[in-house]
Length: 254
Image (cartoon, rainbow, N blue to C red; front, side):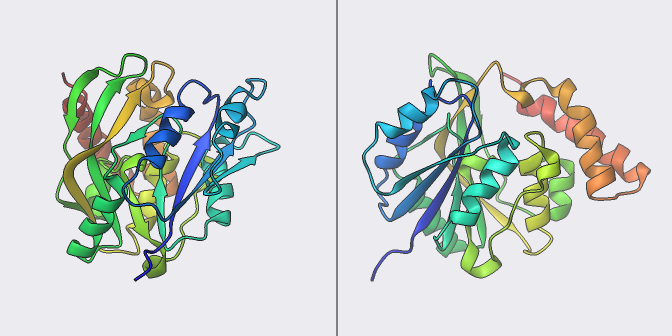
């Protein structure tokens, strides 16, 4: 039986330093029926990231050069509109999949009869690749209400079955901040649960320049998601923000 195609969605912005290793981690997958759609989001790097991608001569890798900067949400949407696979997987241009990632996540999805799965992951220094925090271990399953308190779904660990739920697109009003959070919230309004695989199969580079690295900068966008996007009453927003703050402190504790 022919294995179903997986479409890998990879936005890239100033990704020259790490995208080569990200691509290598895809080429090393034990599950080989995939397409990788990389969208350069008009990076101001004189084409350095594009040149890194063009070094790889594999027909499964498709590079799209966006003519305008649309943020990670817009870049992901460009790729999603081109995706042909039954399964949609997200992989940021600086993260690394372990060789068994796709095969294991599809097996896990079948085992749980799930639409959306995600996994635990390692948190490594962007340059040395040494673990700087203990691995983040995901919960067994989450639903919409769980996600209002905290978001344990890291995009690069996720795979979903578009044949069962359709292709979901990003809210581009979010730009590059909390766009993935809104994405999962919208999806979990249509499916009962997303299931967490306890196996650690992804390396997440914690970059010093990461937008979400400073939690103080995320408080207002987090509030806006709850209040303006999800349209929750103020008292619920206050409750969920408090939950998010406490859980975040524990999540980033060494």
